[in-house]
Length: 294
Image (cartoon, rainbow, N blue to C red; front, side, top):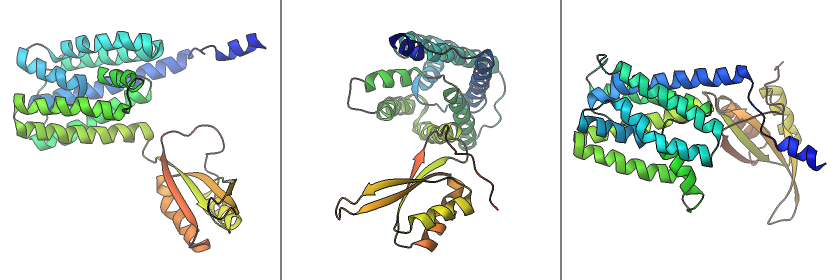
C-alpha cells in the first residue's frame, strides 16, 4: 500500500508532444513581449514593471543592450526558482527569458511603428500583456519579481499580488526621475493595459463563472438552466444559519457570455431567489462541456 502511494505521488513527466507545445507557446509569448518592448515601449521611453522596467532604465542609463540586463537580472531569480519552486517552472522560465533577451536584441535597430506615446502605451501594453499571459499560461515566467513575491508570500502576511504591486510602484515611480513624469504616467497606463491583457490571455475570452442559487423553486430553476443554457447543474444541501431551515443550493458553471441569460432565467422563475456569481480562473474535468439546446 505504501509503495503504491509513493508511485502515485511520483511526478509524472510531460510527454514529448506537450513539452513541444509548451516550448512553442513560450517562444511565441516571448517574441510578442520583445515586439511590445522594442517596437512600441522602449523607443518612446515607456517602461513596464518588474525586472523588465529595471532593465529598460539601466539600458537607458548605461547604453548597454536591453537583452543583456533582461537575462542577467533574471538569472539569480531563476536559480532561486529552480531550488524553491521546481525544475519544470525554472526551465520554462529560462527558455522564455532567453528568447526575450535574444528577441529584444534582434529588434533593437528596427524602426518603431509609432512615435505617439499614447498609441505606444496602448498597443505596446496589449502586445506585451498577451505575450506574458501566454508564457504564464504554459508554465513559465518572464519576471524575477514574481518569483520573489511567491517566496515572500510564504513568510509574510502579504499576497503575491500586493508584493508585486509594491515593487512595481517603486519601479514605475523611478521612471519619472529618468524619463520624465509624463512618461511615467504613460508607463502606468501601459502597465495597467498589460495587466488586464495578461488576465484575459490566461483566463480566455469567455471566462468561467461559478453560480450559487438558493430558492424554494430550485428544481424548476435547475431544469430551466439545463434546457435553456445547456449547462449541467448540481443540487447541494444547505441549512439556513438564521432560520435553521433545510435549503437546496443550485450550483453550476457558466461562461461570462451566459451570465445575463442565467439571471433572466432566475428572475422569471423566482424573483426573490438568492443569486451569487463569482469568477473562476480554471475549470477541469466533470461535465462542463455545453450540451445541445433543443
